[in-house]
Length: 192
Length: 192
Image 1 (cartoon, rainbow over the protein chains, first blue to last red):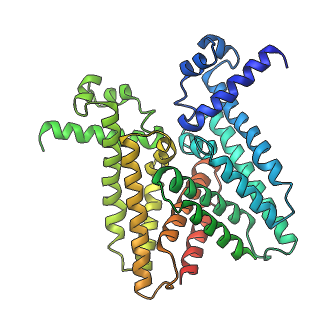
Image 2 (image 1 turned 135 degrees about the vertical axis):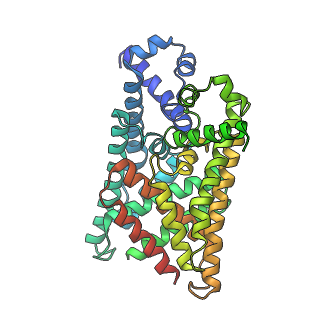
Image 3 (image 1 turned 90 degrees about the vertical axis):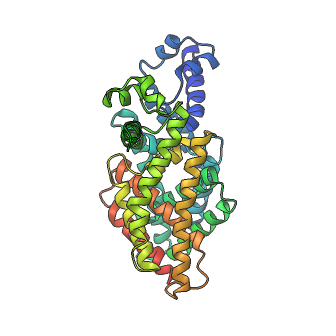
């Protein structure tokens, strides 16, 4: 990796960490530059604009998500075990400091048309598609009933994750973990 | 209402409208002051600090939510009809420009300790409590089974609303409305 690429990767790692808590609009470029011992203009030289940096953060988070959630989740046995593995890894991803960056950015960017919002919508659409496809396989394998709607399952899994986030991170519900488990088990039991 | 109170109310109305899209951290005080023909210092004189303004926005949104969602919803017949009425009104509240401010702020503030986060957590806890209490009444009335967990139902209703938001506002799923309805009907059917 050349020096420019290494610097760009370091900026993106740190920017994505910060954006999990602050969002991309609230990201302090000054703080980011200071932490990385760069000038603001030096930092921007790697991206061109604040908007391009935001898109790069979403793409970087997406690559991390594929590496930490999707790819290992897809190694589980086809169908229900794979669906559970994907959800469990998504839970772990969401329990890191700052929570799930996609849930944070979904709230922040849904009303802000532009390339960062488009990149985020594509990332979440992909995630829902992976969950739906995995559900489809569980139907084909005979684990789930034939009348299960794979995209409905993906929709409801997203909802469980969002409720988990609010209960655990904001409301401070001590039973958040148990409620998550119960909602997940209930959803899967209804598919069988 | 004295002039000072009327100005404060006008500031809060507009600030809350803007915060639905931008959040409270990203709220432009300059834009708010310009729109209301106030100086920034004149605007702050009504609140004292940015933090106090943020708390006032959360409290204002909470009052609007009680007036537009909770109070009319509670007029429906006890139990299941009331639970549905509360959810329907919450859906309408979430379909206004900017969406549901509580879902937006939950993502923005969950990692930002302070009075605005505390006020928001209290507002969402209250909302979950109303949903749980309404579910409890449906159990007492014999509409729902005795082994239904009211707080689990509230948790799952929150999840459905969050999934609706993402599907309708970000992903652009044309079936978002149908998925919401199906998830809600499924949850209620399982309680019977």
